[in-house]
Length: 296
Length: 183
Image (cartoon, rainbow over all chains, first blue to last red; front, side, top):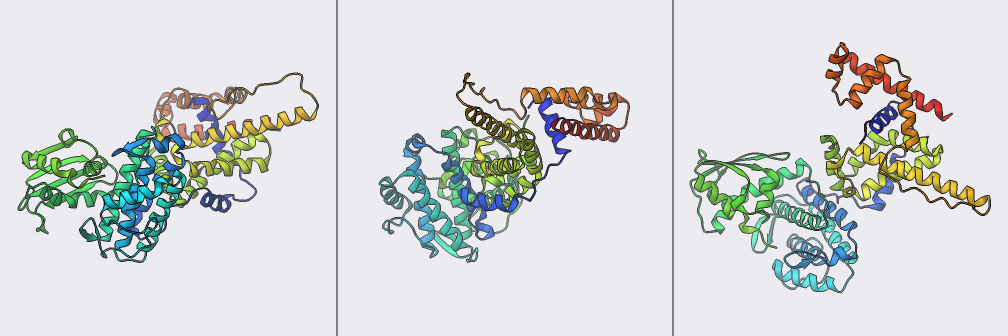
């Protein structure tokens, strides 16, 4: 912005002009009608509700061509949105929330994805967007009344619903980012308060991603430093049975958002930007196996 | 110029569908946006409509704003300016066509991404030259020389606080000078 423009705006700010009546109440009422805010939900599900709202803002600007463009996994944007709705629906079904779209047939995420995609292909992209958003908001509303520790199962994994919904939030974030990249739109990161619990889930998954890849980290401890807004320090036992960490054997320092995306299958572990110290082989094993749970 | 951290955080919250963030954006910038719209349109009702619309656009299409490319204030002001100028031009066209057949079809100039038209910018520059030297120098160093308050103080041989209050005072005088010309 040129200096005269800045000077002009700064001068105007010294000369407050005020509408006859505050426009604030009208504005907020009008805003609701133009774009739905994040669905009210339990505090631990807010990172998910926030990513749903962000994805929806992105979808609002999609035009016809955007919907038929391939984003990831050979899926068009419409099919990708159907995939998100499919997995959200399975989680909803697991905790007794309303399931929208076709009646539940297949109960694994790929099977359900095929069912929902087949159903949505006969509908307009705008309807698919509405169906996905309605499913997400119904899930949010239902979670508002549930304890965080309520067990939930998705693809055979039984963990507290609060962890499942963080994983849904991460997947929604990553796919929104995939779609934004295709559309050449810059999608801002979630707020730090939403990144933090997401990163915490990712950190807690590390012993499992190692085990799933055939490596047993029992008896070893990782010191993880995640930098940037929403980051922090973790001392993690790498054995799945262990609840308390020992002396750290290795230390990984990385950007918090890049770390979450690594777990979500974005980025190559081989050139993942991180500072490693201590047992380097162990640190590399942790990073190499980190994307183990990332699927479509 | 990249946006400050506050702008980024407000933007992140609005993208995430947080209505209270929109309220905060309104509280922070509504008087500026209303003032700017009023200066261009000279109509309080229209200026209110434009103000409302500017914040609604930000809420509805938050990804249209990119904090890497400028401040939120400048982005909102640019939209307000564009809408206000559009309104004034539409009014002019309406008035002209009410007068009868037009002899000259004036093509509206392509609107640039700006918060003030060339004649307004000239008025700001003119008002600046009419400030007392001590105030004008402080503003020139800060705005055109890219100096911080502390550096302005050093160059003028006054404490940082004095430099800051001179700039504040200069901005108030500029605002008054620009307001007077409206009447």
